[in-house]
Length: 232
Image (tube, rainbow, N blue to C red; front, top):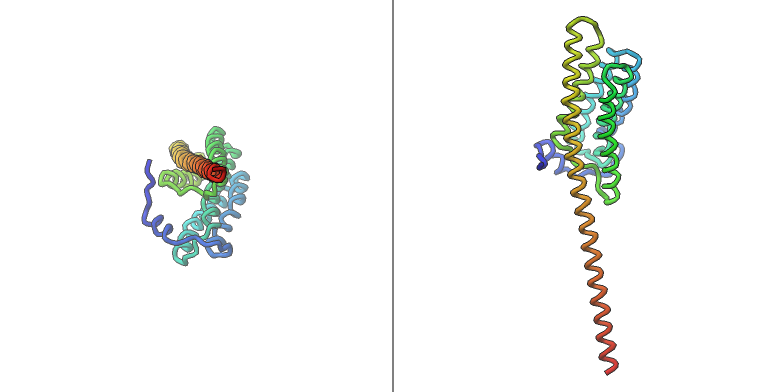
């Protein structure tokens, strides 16, 4: 499946990431990271309305840091790591909290956690070849958006017991199934991209070793010819 680049991604790619650490976008991303345990704790303790408020602030910060990075030309290598990291941690911790609150079944958590574990191993392997995070695919963006929208829907479904809230709960579970399915589809796309990069690097290493062996053999052959000429 080919990578599709939006106008927003194209603008981002034109701006070379810097090694700066202290920037406004990174500060906003840090704030979002700090809200994650707060959201999870509020959900677990049953303070769903307060959790929704903090979740809304976190979602706004997600849009804000990207806007600031492009507008202020403050795209950094650290920011390229913090932004997707914050999104993944928010999803994992929110789903964990929903599981502990018995709002979603535990198999949801296992499916999401297993995907993150597989991708964590892939990122670690890619790092050995000096690769950073893989570019975000539109399927991954869609899956993340669906899950992020689904978390407040599931929280709202537990704020009442009327048939309306039960319908909202069913809608939330349906969205969760679709969101997690897309989440894994995106994961398979990332795995395919990563495996392709790893194979390319292994092929280059083998080619370099082969060329090195040929060069060594050529030098040895030249030395042998020189010795023969000297003996004559």
